[in-house]
Image (cartoon, rainbow, N blue to C red; front, side):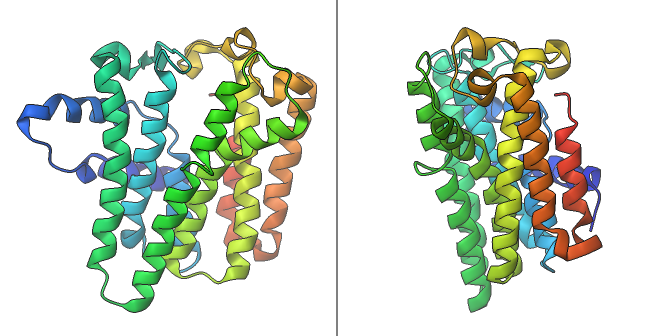
Length: 295
């Protein structure tokens, strides 16, 4: 398997290549889509997709379009999250948010464009498949990504997050929001990579548990960093969760409990893959890397 940086470079070198051609009359749309894709980021979701595919013996070239489609979806969700009607953020990764550069209207359409382009890209790969098993595997990967980013996944979690601002949250509600708002899209990447490789159900079950623990841990740390992170390092305005009285782990349970939960979830993620030994070392190291990030 490759290193984190090798996977990241592969994603960054191919993201823009998969944007479909756009007529000159709508070239501002492409500029807006490219703007948010080029701002950067950790590329957690596509990296996990590629790594999972290689772990299970799959062809990374088959997985790459799906990895990029997944990052399209993640980027569209960030563009929409930053809009004035949502979190109303002026900065993303140290740069002006999409709507501050292109306006609310084009930013909204750029998010729509990225979501639609993701589906288009995955369908285009599916129709190229000739082998029946590959058709099944690619279809399963596409379904995993679209369903976990949809109304029963990421979007559902975002809705619960938005409508429960300034309300007294419960432990169960916090878990629902963090599982779906963040956990589902990270899990989608891992399972889609395994699907493309044709991994068996036992492997998928183990990695699903790993990915969901990792995804929730990722969100818990985001909650922590909003309280005590470095805004210059993170590249966005911090302290908004408490201002908006968000229903997240820190707001409900406090910082100390959040740090404990972050460590517990990370350990549980690693434990899910213990039986795979050194062959799963990338994923254990990845979990530790995410737990110790500062942005």
